Image (cartoon, rainbow, N blue to C red):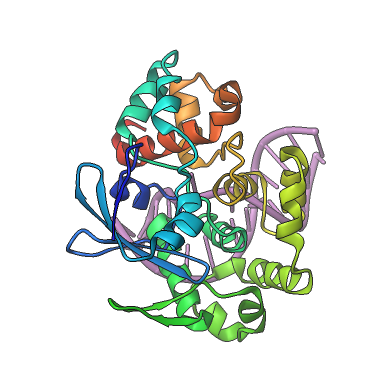
Length: 271
DNA sequence: CTCCAGGGTTTGC
DNA sequence: GCAAACCATGGA
């Protein structure tokens, strides 16, 4: 099926933006995304035309929300014009969108992410999916879904450790136990305001300010949340005199953060 | 081989 | 309250 997308949408930049760790790029230019049990193959045909593997119904029900198409990113970028560095970063990152991903997957993925490089995070998560995720056969490949809480809870400790979790193993097992025993924990958190949601997420061992902000931004669409990691911290030190500028950008701070994060990733020699 | 990674918790003051 | 120490492991 062919669809038209007119707002900012760059598959490669989204895949490389560090929000999702399970996007696969095929040699023919097709991108694969997974969320819950849904799998999408999408390829740019020309200009605003994209070929998608799912039905229009699934596109509208699942993927429109996943890719955050209710938000006008072109307008958001224009509103950054009073900040020179952010304007440049947003220009470089044009096409990035904030993905609305599964809260459980983001919780586990970003606990794993601490003190790991993005390639290491990806391979670690892939091993966990292969170990205890649901196997799905598509027309292109055999894929493993992200494990549900019960599957991770019941996974053998030694086999889980062999996925490269390191010292994060007890954090992961603790989080899996928590969500397995209280299945509505993440769902109920949706009702909380930003401040209370942050504190609720930080109740889970291994979740601090940075990881909680990632979960808020990438799963709960709390676009005021701007995670400060090592790269963002370098930018704050070198471009903003050590003063965190993100609170100044209000409810689009998280989007500004994502443009700047992508800029720092693609211009490592400047930091 | 060494160095560091989308940090967080624990410990010591 | 705040720094500093400590954490396992893979990728570069």
